[in-house]
Length: 191
Image (cartoon, rainbow, N blue to C red; front, top):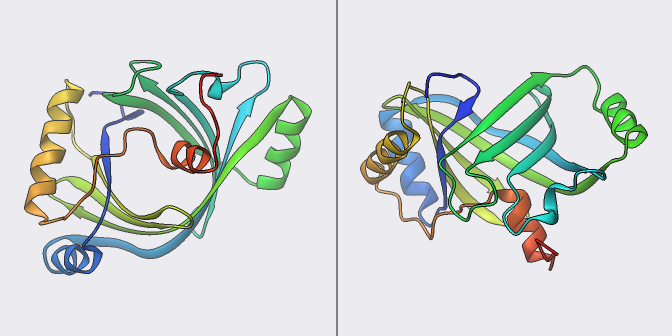
């Protein structure tokens, strides 16, 4: 994809974290280790993102030691079990508290909070993260850093890199952490 606002990634539960960390520490460029991120997800009341069986939009405020950010993600194709990529728009903000007040004033409500510790490496032009997510477990995410005109080609590259890592992974997560957490708590999507 030519646009820097497009994200191509895959995510899996990770069953052999220590072995993968060891491989990455020996063979990849370490970017950061054990960075705490608190992600709070929101939805506008007027355009409820969770009314679909497969939500395709997410609005997030992130707090981490790297700063405060607001992010909007829009997955394609919309309301589909399997997506190819997402548009991602992110920028720094000065105050999470002020953003929360703005959201409350315009009827944007909180729906989920994800608290995680993230470690990041770059290997073969792929950003690789290991997330330890409260209430959900350990996951590995691979994201294309390079240019791909076709998202499916980018995903194929990610699966190729995944094999090189020797990672023992569970079934691919197609929905993301907020969806997983809400589903675990019994939320019924599309109702």
